[in-house]
Image 1 (cartoon, rainbow, N blue to C red):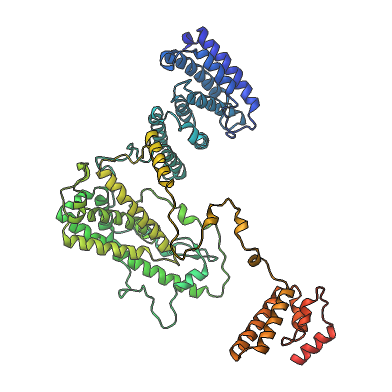
Image 2 (cartoon, rainbow, N blue to C red):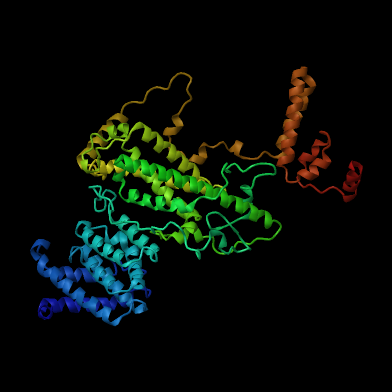
Length: 598
């Protein structure tokens, strides 16, 4: 690089970059990632770089010009990494350099992937905390740096993110891993095939090893030995729950709990332990179930597991009700943020026998296992004769299996799926129903992805409409609209006002939108009195009703309605409606009226 750096052209780019980067340090308002540099800030630099690139086309001058810009960018980048720490505010010079490279890339004045090459090396040079800061930059600039020339950038993005994921711990850096995945999902198009697994390969390396001895040791922790905070009610999910929520599950006196089972004996976890963990081999390699003996064993294991979970749920619910009875009358406080359950994420559970009792009594563990079972049951139901008929015309034969599930096994899968769904909906209040609805939504949408993969992942991007097609459609629409309007049918209202250029407010009836004055009601009441004197009995009755209605509306429309109610008694003294300035009734009269009423 030293020999290249001594060239006159490189020196010219170097002076140009150094001058403008120093100038941008003053222009940018703030010492941090935000705000980003705009094209207006770098307009002078872009103009001078274009002048140095010459009037030749990018294809003719790309190699020498791109090499010069990349050399100068890397020199500044390495120099800043040696002198600046990512924790210091002065590291904003690195963010400025990356913004400059991104703007030059959009104008095709450097390699499109240069910014991600620099980001990749920046991630390699930082510890995990520093990588979080780098990802703060990537997330804030994602839309701009991936908008153009994505075809030249996507492999670098995928490689750098995968390398970062290998460095992260899925248990300790769960949130950061999620940020990386979300960045990939938002950067790549929805129909990208980079992580589709077209061949349908299973993760056979995920082998679950468990103890051969299914007896727990003498010093193992019992689930009921865990100390419970007396100031809060612990729900089945392991999170603080309101006392009112716990009372909802408490049956009334003389009633049995609806979820109680006939067999109240504690579950035999010693016998369940080996068959429970043996199911993981089928979860990681589902095609093992194509063999009849493995499918029979899996059906028995899943049935025993579900029965055990039902017993555990009933026992925990009964103990919770007893705890609620013993704590009745005591003031309970909710401590903590209430996010303990949502933050208890385990990517792979431990299989030690001494921990099995605690795991089974954790609702997050039970739900995790049952969701795995739902996935396997959906996989089996996709192999029925009717389901395979729908995929018979699919192109990707790697995910089409020759095995066909029998009707008896399909009926078992449906009934077991219904039992699991019923179990997952249990819980305090509606929490279980909300959880199952989320799981059911995800699994339903996954069926669409399975069909898309079976069809060899056809493009789901809709191509833009051609200019000729758009103009042709526009002309045809004009011809259709230019035809004379059909005459209105007999009895239809005139709609000429729709063709007039009138404001919406002018179409409103101002009379209906305004509140009538008491004087207007007074005139209407007098007219009703005249009708009552000269009409038939039916007209008299209608006039009296109209008079009472108008009087009530007049009292309601008046600001002095309470004073008017005292002045107007049984429709008498109606002249009070014509008085504009109402004076309140004397206190003595009001007192006498109240006394007479009492």
